[in-house]
Figure 1: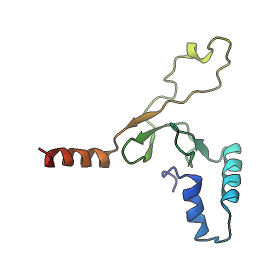
Figure 2: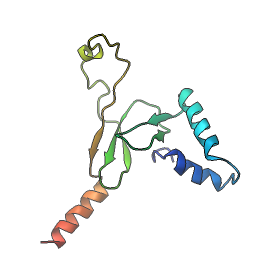
Figure 3: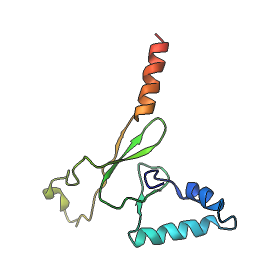
Figure 4: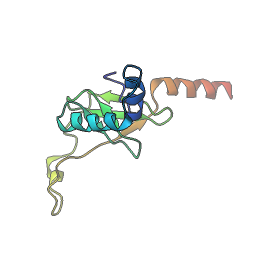
Length: 119
């Protein structure tokens, strides 16, 4: 589960199998508490529903534009934005988010197969 980046609703469905009387509100509240305590990270990626990440070590993410899967990226330096941009105008910049997106290996393979079959 650590690398799956589930939504609150997905976690709710999993937890309900063990705790059938749990409410979605309880799941949301606990996810917010875990986020505030920095036990997990809340990901708000490109207009989609918030997802949660059990890996709190700093890293970036990449989202597949075909299937929506989100994967961890540990090979990208964390300081990709030069220091001079961390003070913009009158703002005291507290952070930034870079979104990577593309086709995951499975969707890339499917697309290549479809292109071969259509020729």
